[in-house]
Amino acid sequence: MPKTPKPLTTTLAQAIHEFVRDGDAVALEGFTHLIPFAAGHEIIRQRKRNLTLIRMTPDLIYDQLIGAGCVRKLIFSWGGNPGVGSLHRFRDAIENDWPAPLQIEEHSHAALASAYTAGASGLPFSILRGYTGTDLPRYNPNIRFVECPFTGERLAAVPALRPQVTIIHAQKADHRGNVLMWGIVGVQKEAALSAERVVVTVEEIVEDLGATPNASILPFWTVDAVVKVPGGASPSYAMGYYDRDNAFYKRWDGISRTREGFLQWLKENVYLEQSVSESV
Image 1 (cartoon, rainbow, N blue to C red):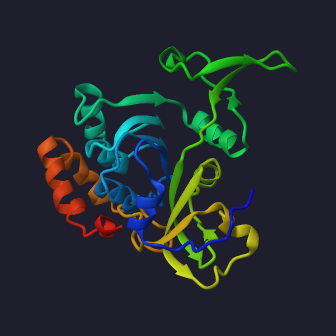
Image 2 (image 1 turned 135 degrees about the horizontal axis):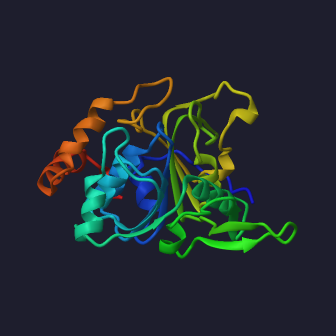
């Protein structure tokens, strides 16, 4: 059902204040590039709590959100610092309950992608060929098996994902809220269509997207807020705007290895970024 047209453009602080609520299930999606780091930092600044975070391949931004105490549960498929190693704040939460205990629900990439698709389609669960011969169903009770009524084939089933909020980053949006992105596109569209509320940060807001209608990944009626945030995906990259900051991904291993180093980094690089959230 199309959403009622309304003013979509706002500030990042206002969008997070209005659309991300304590206890929500929140998906911040973007595969390799267009990862919404700026939005994640605003969630940290506003001290949102008890969130269930959902993401394929959680990397640095989820490590930061976990270490900042925002997260109660993580639903994910593979987690790490790509090309470098472990996520130390993630590991500390699992192994030592710091800064708080963290529940986890691990899936394969294929399962999470199909779960988003099921949520976007209004279905209660998704089915896939997978998990046969693996141990993961022993540890995740949300992986079950069903028999195909037509062929008798045994298939895996996982619950549909329906986050309260999905946040993505894209290259462009127009003033109506139509969103355009290009390059590597992961599950951003499915994650957005499965959510109750959708926030999109973009490199720029333009009068004309300069693209055919079918090129718009998300039409305006699927989006609740659009925020202009140049550099909003850094240190990941936005194709056509800036490259991936590989050096930062390497530095993060040392920054996040100790609690003291991580907290100092948060203080200097996230909390000291002036946010107008205190006035909203």
